[in-house]
Length: 171
Image (cartoon, rainbow, N blue to C red; front, side):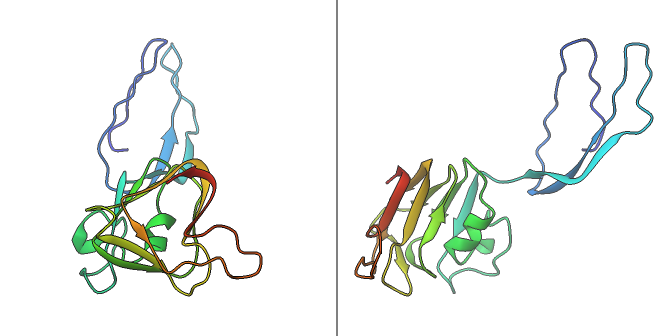
């Protein structure tokens, strides 16, 4: 992306440039040992997504204008679901102090960590409406830490789990 990367010899090398979060077009041109190149490069439009490793979530009304990729407190997501929608595996979603309402059970189905910024007494997750679970963990590497989960119930017929239903994952 930008200047082409030249690869010589039998061991390819790669140069990494820090890029802003976005979808990028990938182009591949093959050059043989005599200097000949492919006549038609292979191009994939919007193929590679570069994403931040940390996404921020602040309670509604406490930030400026939410804007993807939610990497500053001024542009933080105002709901957990929005941040998780753009979280790739190995992303940490950080919840600011305050009450974070969800629209029901939030499923984490990849290696994503959701944690409170200043610990469990300050970051509170409350599903609305109740009853039901606040979270469903469905990946062995999914993690919840440093937050309080409240306003949950399993009184509904067929409900599974309390605050967190763990199919796979760690709390």
